[in-house]
Length: 260
Image 1 (cartoon, helix red, strand yellow):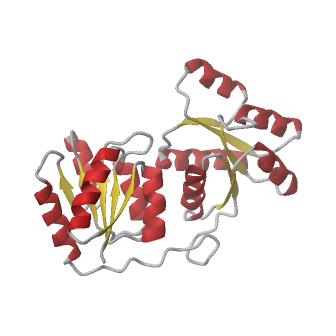
Image 2 (cartoon, rainbow, N blue to C red; image 1 turned 45 degrees about the vertical axis):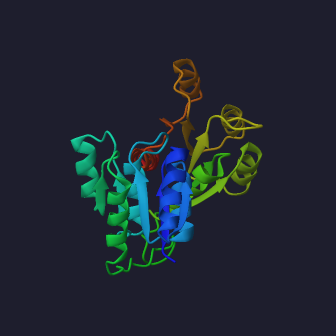
Image 3 (cartoon, one colour; image 1 turned 120 degrees about the horizontal axis):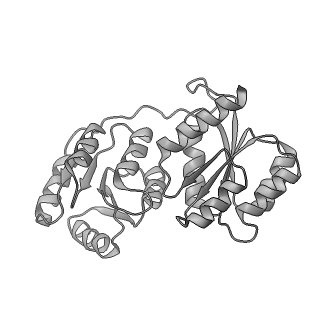
């Protein structure tokens, strides 16, 4: 049975598409966020992915970039209701299999998926593992501290594939314990966490003379809270949803400046 993945933040749309494609004989998986969708993509390796372009937290283009990092040949069909020409061009630049505007007949989408599954399967190259000869190991370690499992795993995977020695923990106590044992070069620290929040973790790090760098990640867009975050003295404050390319550039800049 052909496996199909649907990533759309609209639960009703997911359920509708799941019903339609199940009737056409597909095994359908669905996710209502980009992060959840990427986790399913990695775990289940669907034959075709249907991806909504406009989603909160992580939009379709960002999801597509990450899918391409894992599998350059994976068939991805984007549903692009309200997409601009620039967004559509970006999607095509990322080798999207097809771009279908929302509002068209479901028969068009079904026909598109049926056509794609008839094409020969292109084999993706084996993904490199951090620390292997295929990946240029930077020799730099990054600790991701975030109580949201999917975010934490995504960031660890993203950084590992780019040569960093990345590992993650879910909270402040675990982070402080790890820093005591083996201080990382950089910490990505979520500001709002259950139990010990990021601000308290940061204060504890300073109290313990942690010599590495800290980038704060926060979902807050409140200027007062952002000012509080900057007052802690991080090298950078990055908002959620996380732009992974921006994050990577910030990490590279912070680590280069540290060497200087």
